[in-house]
Image (cartoon, rainbow over all chains, first blue to last red; front, top):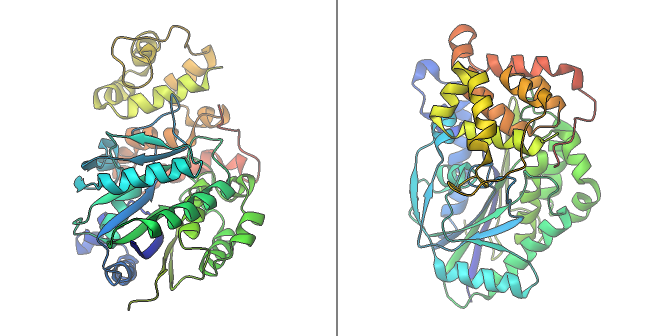
Length: 286
Length: 124
């Protein structure tokens, strides 16, 4: 059976690359600390020696729109292009061409359907910064095949927090049952409290530091009960109009089996809080 | 109201450099043409099939022409789509004049009267 060798959940700040490669005269004061934390976090994935990455992300209205927005979608392709025009324009993100793993994609899709998750499938998916950012931070070599799973965190109404957690548990089970001796790491990104296009955007702190504190502590402690009790759709919007991305962290906690995390780090990057968390379902390899 | 159609305008104009440039230089011409031509192509990828029934209200049309992102917010237009296109239109100009994030901060200030209130719903 396959090894679920690591589960990573992290924020996907699109300006990490620009901030940490800026010339000295333009380098923001936090860049060095940010880079140190990301490089330390990268080591938690490297230590897991993954062969394949299952990447959990969400399309920021790049490929998908309200004419037909999938709740849950998996890519099944030999190759994936990455980075959309407006991400090059706004964030200076580079393009990637990533190898896929059609066998694992197909196995997961069938397994999810068998577990009554009505997944959409794409055979021509292009990946956006929800996947590109964690590639840059945790696997910049971009050398491993990927299986992308996209969730709807943007086009309300979204599936429930409970459903995201159930999906995480289902993926954990399926990956662990995959008939292969490969080492699979699941890397997912999402949002803590975040405001985009609203009055609390780009302020001196994230829109709700208290939400961030509680959310990080709950995730780090594997405390799914408190999360499901407190993190409702209404509570997320109240914390910031783009906080729906927290749903992907709930999914990752399911992949992690709602256990306490093995690695927890964070960074107060003024208008956002960054989070870096890793679980080792098969024991800490470091 | 057709907030779906306003959301579609923001999505499709943002992703096309020629439409974006026209939205900056001649918004009345672009909005007027797009509403009856490009916007009516089915979904976001079709080139022949059309949707017959989509149109803007007078208020939606004028709010788009005026680049009135506060008005769009107050109509419940998708905030992420709105922010993304207006950053594309104004961020460089503002940064040159007043430094990085100056546009985003003015945007936030113009919406400050919504702080602590329930924002208009984006759900369609």
